[in-house]
Image 1: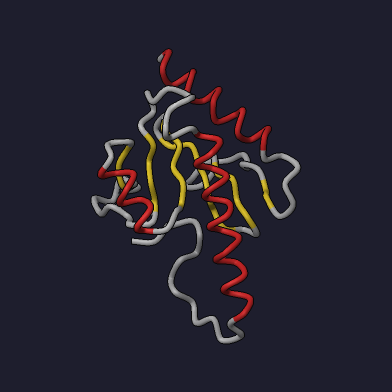
Image 2 (image 1 turned 30 degrees about the horizontal axis):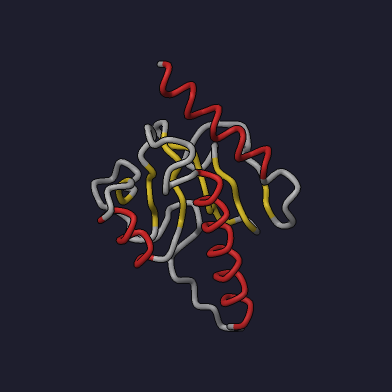
Length: 136
């Protein structure tokens, strides 16, 4: 369980890093999907799942990261990889191309851009992305 502990500590460092960021809420206690998630205005942008950092990024960015071997599409144990969710390799070195801090910051920027896109559209027409289930 050593790798899981190290990964959990890395995620806890992220939580501390994003603690005072306006609009970001920290993981909440309890059970269920998203319990270990960082949210921006209620939408998950980064979470800790099965020892890996999982972030929501543009689909083309996820495809590039996956193609480069830095991780995989996240599938939430439903058998369907989600195109905008990336699970970083848990064993990647902290100073690698998939630095967790950088990925989380990139995911936050994406969440912010999506939030501003939604606020510009008065008839947002729910796209089915609650933030908790990802985008498949």
